[in-house]
Image 1 (tube, rainbow, N blue to C red):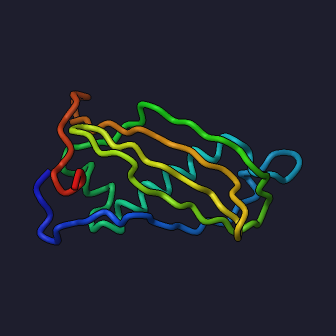
Image 2 (image 1 turned 180 degrees about the vertical axis):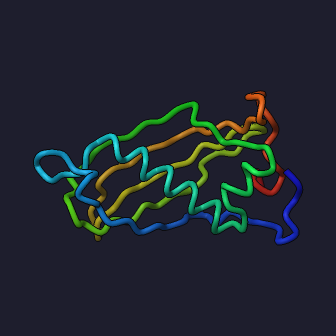
Length: 136
């Protein structure tokens, strides 16, 4: 990927609001546990966008960020129509990987915390060094 002329820069912590949709809930109208990983992806994608590059542009340049690890700790339930904030930050940037941290909160209540590790690969699936601006 070419260096962006905007010199993208990753915010320390990025916040994204999301409202729990009915189809994301279980039989008790609570957010199904599997959807937290989707929310983490929303946080990562929006954090990248806030740095000046969309994930679509990243892929169009022939690079992909694939999840190699994911964890989530559930602390409190979230329910249909709750307005949640996904806090996302980079805990560690390596040569070809990023470790993100997350908090999903409703008001002052922490609903869940988690981490993911994404690895940069090219179109052929070969590990590729992260662009300098993304590691910075």
